[in-house]
Figure 1 (cartoon, rainbow, N blue to C red):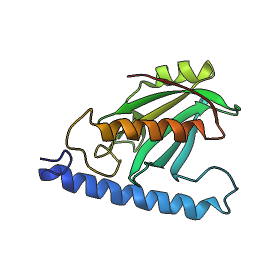
Figure 2: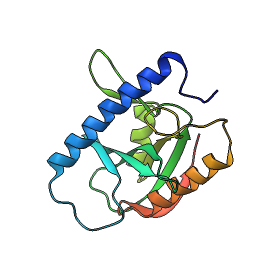
Figure 3: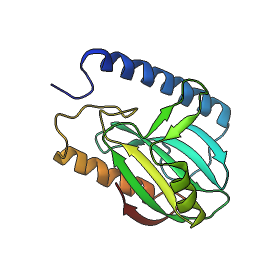
Figure 4: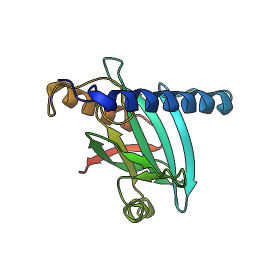
Length: 168
């Protein structure tokens, strides 16, 4: 059995991707002209809270699969080092009462690291959460390649100083 394709999970993932696609389309339509730079990922949304900003992306893996990533980085900072946490399922949840996005990492931890000059990148493995694709097993060679693609993409971004550490 392939993870993410059984029972109600398939319907939920399909509906979730539809909403994510609509948000990404709206964000791109409102963004206006794009500046030249590294290959763009689909920026689903950006927001600011306290001393950090949140940006959501789809990062292309080498086989074209889109992997979901949220980056929390210090507000108004130049390039910073990044701590990357690649998760098998969701990187964030949506509070149904308020509509607020709740990261799986506590906001106090995000505030701590961003106030010390680090970006926090929360990623979802293929087939989990908002990431596309499927995976037959955890710890497969494909997931290792996806991790390398994620690291290389982050290191090439203008907000990254190219230094990454892995957590989780």
